[in-house]
Length: 133
Image 1: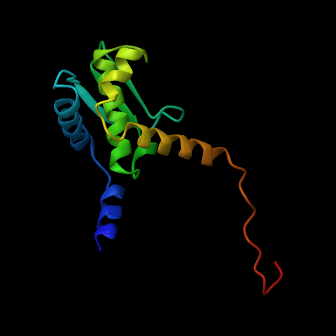
Image 2: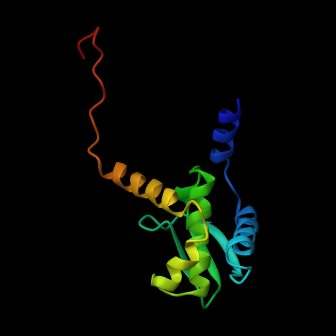
């Protein structure tokens, strides 16, 4: 029963307001509240990135492709973009910030798996053994 509830929760769609609240909570918990975006929202025009950040505007955008993924994955991407409000680029200072999040490696592995699965050849539909089709 608990597994079923957890699965339902991970598929729940967050709205933009909930995403902004989540970003504030993650910033407080892992970045000492130092990363304060002006807006956080879902977008449908990011098909090659999971998220993006424009520090000068204080805006964070997450790809709609993340919707329905486990919450720890969404949290990781949000935290990744929040860290960019503090440190541009992906140097050692940036990754040190993300070290505080205990599921960083797991989330990165999940996202890498999604990308890899998208590159797999699509298998033809299984033949119906009884009809021979």
